[in-house]
Image 1: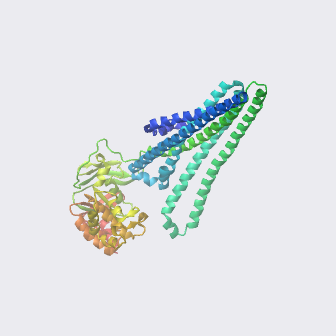
Image 2: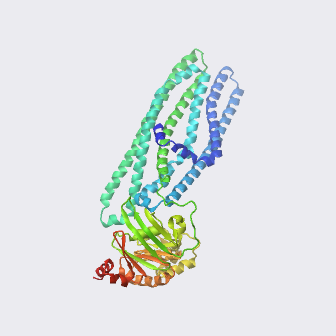
Image 3: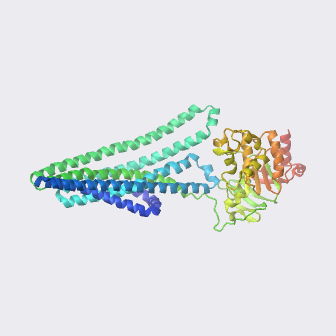
Length: 580
């Protein structure tokens, strides 16, 4: 732990800070621990004294008195154990609940760039496995560590007070036990960290390949993926075996030391008892203490190993919580109640990675209510412009204004409420049709859902489903066609009634007949609403008020359909290429 704290001096205390709201019940639990430890220390003395008194005065009253006292000790131990376990488990569950909520809330605030570079399986492991690994630390480990420290100190003190000579014989093997504990702690820490990393790798592999199972089956790569899974599974299996092996070696060694110490006490104590230097009851007390003394030592070493596992998980959780890859929110963000829809780009430069710019010195203005389309070859920067309008990324140079307000002065959540975005790759959640349109927003009534579905001509297929708007949707909407998923995406966007409508290849997955219905609906919907479209099929954007042609990250041409054809430039070449 010393090496660990050199790198993370506040990690352990940061973990413990999550128990600060539970300071009073935790103090009560620790007080119960002290009572339990006291009962365990008194128990052998009580029996030892009873043995000596009965040998000298064999009267029934003595047995009755000590029997009642022993019974009361057992009752106190039972009550203390029950209350302590209940309090600690409650503290642990509440603490983990709070930590898990904080992790998920922080993940929601991260930029899209973080999710583009971090595997989903890794993030799932952080929220589930790693937080759960901390549960034992919060619910039992800290109290058990405290209890074992108290027990060791208590046994040392009581044994030295009762008979220093016999106590020193009992402690002969303590240096060897200390060496074993140190070695175990180092080996177990290494084994725990390897196991946690292997588990993360396996979860990442599963998440990625279960999501891409369709592609695996299309290309008949099942055997190869099975072999890859086998390799990762074997690595995790060996990591866990390494943990088990370390415990399998350590436990018997400590037990062997306890037996040796017990033999020493038996031998030396027996000689002292025969010489009547000590009583038989005193020998009984020391035999019980030696048996009990090595238990907390063994537990303490194992708990240090568990603590290392918890700290290793804590490192991963806090590395996520400390991630600063976020869209910064100003201290006093602007939160306008309505938006007209005027958009301005002023000399914008943007790159996803360092200075590899995908947008270079982009400047344009979109007036409220205008219908503007962006066209160009793949990689020209069209979708990047749409992402910047919603401030899913921040620009490196230049400014973007909406209604004359620089978007970095907005609260991102407020800004995005006014922007409805329809993407080519539609994501549907497990639930029903209605929840996928409203996304749980209570302000959107059933009437609003039906109206949005009718306007985009989605009501026809929805009402034909069993259950209609209550029909269940499987993960990612796998039971619906690509066109049906796209229509639901349109209905979802329109139900939120955005001031700015953004469509990124929104009609790419819809057949020609359905696209005709949507185009007629969009003509009505785009009135008095700023609309930005990205499309490869130029036939879908010919009636836009303005068409902007992107090429290699720069804005090359701008105008309506006829004006761009007259310029005899990039747009005309694209148009003629599609006609041919």
